[in-house]
Image (tube, rainbow, N blue to C red; front, side):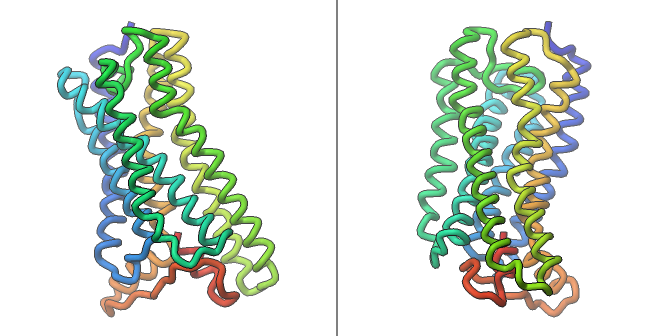
Length: 296
């Protein structure tokens, strides 16, 4: 027994409302990137790419997929592509930070095209695969890879095109940010006047991988439940969808609202049109380590 029509309508309204907030956050990041030249650096370009795919995820939840099979197929493809691409972009950002902060590469923009091929190319291939196996359909309150045709095959497909990449990216991101935190503590813990800023930065670095864990754990649990029980739990489906829909808003807040962005917007608000310049290198100079790391 699936969800009732009334439950689907309620979930659609909730998901669309939260997605609207995420879409607004993603649009804000894109506007900021386009409006301030000092922020048009490679690091923030990666954050803007993440905002764009988050916007795509948000838009896909505006589709009332429970009304029509064509809309359902469209939503399934869009969710499959944009959610996986978003996950992969977070790992690209983590990799860029690793190369800059740990390996101290001077120019990480050499990874621009590889990042796009990785985050968008793999997501595109993954989102096409269910069309080949005719596996897209209703998956609780939104459309994705269904499991009512061939449970074993379609469960494997779900794992391959989303959950295995997701739970490989999460520990990778966590390890990278922990390495950066260790380096921050080792290299700049002796700067007393920067202690408060250092602690703020460390807390923020810990939030990056936590976003995925917080937003994606409920839907992972829900899919495990789906495997063992055909009858969806309304509360679990609700929390799962909310986690996916709010992911874009949290990414915009944590990844996008850096000190550089705040200063740029504040400068624009005051009307002087000046923004602080931000450099690409990380941890290269004792006097500006905090400013450079705050680019992310």
